[in-house]
Image (cartoon, rainbow, N blue to C red; front, side):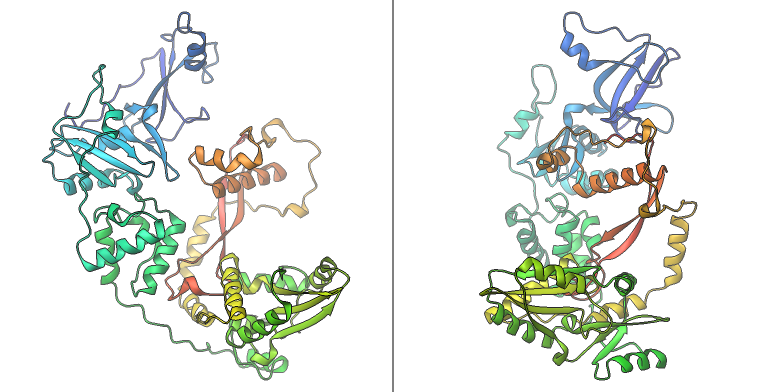
Amino acid sequence: MTKTSDVTIGKPISNASCHILDAAMRHVPLGVVGEIYLGGVGVSPGYINLPELTRDRFLKDPFTNDSGMMYRTGDLGRLLPNGQFEILGRMDSQVKLKGYRIELDEVANAMMHHPEIVSAAVVVKDKSHLVGYFTPATVNVEGLRQTVADLLPVYMVPAMWVGLDMLPHNCNGKVDKLALAGLEATLTMEPMQTELEIELAAIISTVLKVNQSEIGRHSSFVALGGDSITAIYLAAALKQRGWRVSVRDILASGRLCDLATEAKSQPPLHLPVVSDVALSTEVIQEIMSHWPTYESAFATTPEQSFLVQSTIRIPSNWVLQVPFLEWGAAKMAVAYGQLAATCETLRTTFVSNPIGVYHVVNPATSSSIEYSSATSLSEFLATDKARGFTLADPSFARFTVVTCGGDSVGVLTIHHALYDGWSISLLRSDLFDTYSGHPVSQRPSFRALIQHLASHDMTKTVAFWANYLAGAPPTPCLSDLVPPTSCPEPNDLSLATHAALPRLPSVIRSLGVTMSTVVLLSWAMALQHHTNRHDIVFGQVLANRNLDVHGIDQYDHLIWELTLTFWGVGCSGAL
């Protein structure tokens, strides 16, 4: 055996068993890390005169038909493809960092694969990043970092490295990690060198709110605290400076120096030439019959088409109302008219025919500013919501000055086909800037995005979804189902966190998952419960702001897309 060999405990003999389980006492897949449990005739009833420790460590074995016991070792391990069990360290070496569960001993074990490393240990520094300690101190840090990066995900690669002549040990002969954490050692971190690297570090410092001096050229964005959301903001900030980099590039890059080089070596992303895609004569005639003075027309995204078709059936569907209670209504109406003159979104309506649904951008004179009286704001909102939008409206957005008694309130009413959660904040910001007399950002034309989507090879997209959903059973619409009067026990849905809703975010963070993951899982379980099916297909909305389109973060329009998730859910309804 060499120092880089896997530390295995072999295979269990015939009257013993070994299980790798997760926190819910379920077997983890082959190769996945979990806690080691031992069962069989060799497990005793418990510790002598230690009832509490016995209850914690000696458990009823759920994987046997007899009354045997199972011992919880507290060790981390995994089952290898050859049937051997590998030990990776103790459970107390597991930490949660930036939403990820990380086994510190697993990182140290990866460091030991470097041929020159004699000993290694990893600790968490300032609750923000990993620090790798190693001996001897003469080992080349870049070679060590590359060794770890070849074996582990990027979020498990230490952000900083410390070379020592000897690791400190406690009286039991184990590495003293408390002493390591308190060492006043000089962190081996190579600073940014080129102008590009320094510029990148400055932008990352702003996005992640970390000290620029802590950002090394061999650090990774994830190791510094980045995630998918902050990666979107970083990509947007870099694109504003002429860099061509995607969210995927940022998250996948193991070293910031490589990210700086690759981003600048990409061919420049030129501003798109925005022009209307040629429409058929039939479509143009349809548009002209309704809006003879229109400025431009182009296709819609599938999501927009769905939303508009839904509103054709029920005008009140997908309507958002934004009252401006703290702002002067008359002045806000003037600001809305000024903004609509340059904002195509506020002048957009739709035309639908058997071929499809199309955007129609009308002249500035068609922007809708109305005046109304009501006994209360809630009365107006109810009436306005019921009115909704129809294809006869010159715009699927309007601003109303509502007089209630002696007070006036401005209300923006806009259809979901024109906005998403990201863009509505941009529209509000532009409206406030106009109201205050500040310059307004120039937003890209939505036509550029439509052209980008139209350039994609749809045959590949169709082939992907056909393969992904092959064999997936259709999920019936809940409104078509008769509510079950009784369900078998496995389908009972429960939320077993035993925490009040205000505490739920902190509980979820402690589990090392995200809120969106829990919501998606809960939704899948609810669908399972109400449809009596184990395999569920449901829709999921994505922000879609990582498309390779110039200024994608500045679009004041509906960008999100609806994708499908095929989720195989087990019979247990406990979460």
